[in-house]
Image (cartoon, rainbow over the protein chains, first blue to last red):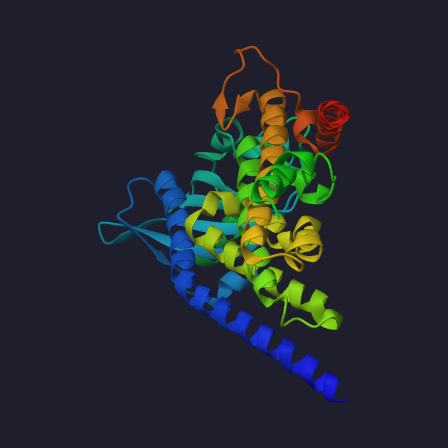
Length: 180
Length: 199
């Protein structure tokens, strides 16, 4: 009996010290990690809507109604809203595909950037390349986009291409139904 | 315990990847480019040194019955710390390694060194053993990653070096290609070490 208590105590000490070390590290890195995540989004948003002065988060409960949508940002130019950037998460071939879609207030797509993906190298990863992504630029948001009608898919990567267009369509839906 | 010997064992003669053939899951999964392999190796090295040192320090106070849970707690703590640090300061590497970074916890090289070495040896030689095994792992992953990136993407450490019309062999950067390259490297390495042993 005494032995059990002793073993338990030793484990308790080891785990308590570990927990302490973790909380110190977490405290130290937490803010930097958060900052990096915002900066990463911001870099993409500046690429998509280069003439915006500022971006601010759109706070609306309606955003959660479209399941693919993660977050939405409003682009401000000279005090007015010049467009929106919407972040979506869809399932690709190798995991989640995070896409930022920029939409101008006039209802055209300003551009898209793949923020994160784990698709097959040299196949699905081509959704991150300009050849695929630039096809969306200038398309109208008045209807849902279809693969191989409005844009050409990446050859041999139907699932990755579908994930991309799904994300963009979710952004269009949010723009048309809520933000516009 | 001869420190030099401990070091050479970890890096070459008892190389975790090419001789012991352990830790295969991260080896195959993240060696699709040189920089990923190198980064994974360094992250694992940091964990190995930390866990080896702490486990060696605690070895007299650790009862045999609960040594494994204590090893796991120590290793998991170091992995989580490294994960947070990499996420904060090396974000692109964090994204490239993905799930395999937290999975260093179950990398059997680390538990194997804790059980086979750190639990029985002094703090200094355990630190050297951790460093050596980590470097051995890093070396193996970097070689593997360089070869796979060269043939699979035509570049090394992100710099294109193959000629313009070179068509990348996609299979090499996919899991099946990982097995092929690893098999060939294992064969080459064992020719080399077998010769050394017979001299």
